[in-house]
Image 1 (cartoon, rainbow, N blue to C red):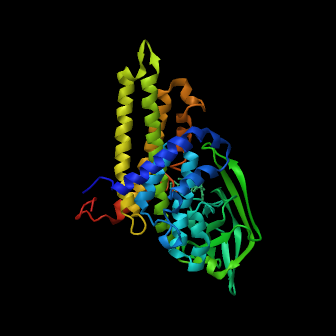
Image 2 (image 1 turned 180 degrees about the vertical axis):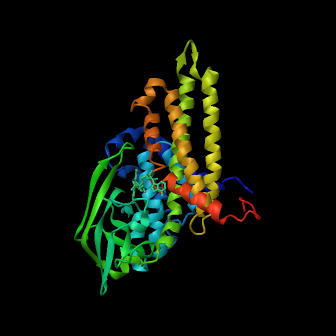
Image 3 (image 1 turned 90 degrees about the horizontal axis):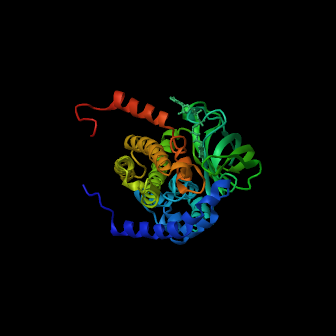
Length: 384
Ligand SMILES: Cc1cc2nc3c(=O)[nH]c(=O)nc-3n(C[C@H](O)[C@H](O)[C@H](O)COP(=O)(O)OP(=O)(O)OC[C@H]3O[C@@H](n4cnc5c(N)ncnc54)[C@H](O)[C@@H]3O)c2cc1C
C-alpha cells in the first residue's frame, strides 16, 4: 500500500497553490455577495484545472477522480465559493456528458468547459423532493424526434449562468425510480427560466429553475428511463468532490488558526503557548488526517465512478469533521473569528454546506446501515 502522491500530482498541487496564494486567497471576501468567481475560474482554466474531468480528445486532461479531489482540496483551503464553482466543472456534470452523451454534444460543450468558456449545472432537487429522487416530478415527454421537458427545480448552483443544464427527469411519465433518466437542456431553450433566488450563508446564489414546454432534440435525452442506478453511481464522483471541499476548508482553517496562535498575544505570551489551544490543534490535525485517508481511498476506488460504500463513509466523515474543525478555528480566533475580516468565519460558513449537498449525511447513513445489516458477508469481514 503506497500512500505517497506521484511527482505529477505534487506538481499539479504546487501550480494550484500558487494561484490560491496569489489570486484566490487575497480576494476571497469578494464572493460573499453572490457574484460568480469568473476570474478565479479563468486563472484555473489557464493551468488546465477546468479540463480535468474531460477526455483528452475534447481538450481535457482526463484526470482521475483522485486528481480532481486533490485539486479541489487545494483550492478550497482559501475560498469555499471558488471551490464549489470549480466543482461544477470538474465534477459529475462533465463526467455525465463525457460518459453518456452522443459525440456531437461532447464536441459542442466539453472543449469550451475545459477552456473556461462554458459552465455546467446539475439540476436534481425539486421544490417537493430533494433526497427523494424516485419522486421527482420533472418530466420529459418524447414526441417523435423531440423531447418536451416540463417541471421545476430548486436550490440549483449556477443555473442562471450555465450554458447547459444536466437535468434529472422522469421519462414519459413513468412512475417511481424506474422512470428516472437525464436530459440536457441548453441555455436559451425556449421555456427555460433560471433565476438566482436564494442568497446563501456560504456566499453563493442558488437558483430556481422552471421548464415550460422546453423542446430539445431526442438525442439530448442522454439517459432514458431506468437510469436512476446509473446516475446515482455517477453521482459518487460528486460526493468525493463535496468531501474534498470540506477537507480543504478544514485544512485552511487549521492553517489560519496556527498562524493566529503564533501572532496573537494574551497574558504576556503567544496564545499558541497555551496548552489548551495546542491540544485543539492536535485534535484538528488528527481529524483532518483521518478524513484524508478515507477520502483518498474512496476517490482512488473510481472505476470509472467511486465505490459507493467507502464514498458514503468518506463524505459523511469529511462533512462532519469540517464543521468541528472550522468551528474550533473560529474559537481560536476569539471575537475576531466571528467577523468577515478573517478567513475562518467564511470557511466555517462554507463548512455547513457539505452535509446538505451531494446526498445528506442522513441518507448516506441510511445507505451505510442498510449495506451493513443487509449485505455484508461477515464470513469475509466488514473490510473486505
Ligand atoms: C449550497 C448548496 C448547493 C446546492 N446545489 C445544488 C445543485 O447544484 N443541484 C441540485 O440538484 N441541488 C443542489 N442543492 C440542493 C441539495 O442537493 C438538497 O438540498 C439536498 O439533496 C436535500 O434535499 P432537500 O433540501 O429537499 O431536503 P429533504 O430531502 O426535504 O430533506 C430534509 C431533511 O430530512 C432528511 N431526510 C430525508 N429523507 C430521509 C430519510 N429517508 N431518512 C432520514 N432522514 C431523511 C434529510 O437528510 C434532511 O435533513 C444544493 C444545496 C446547497 C445547500
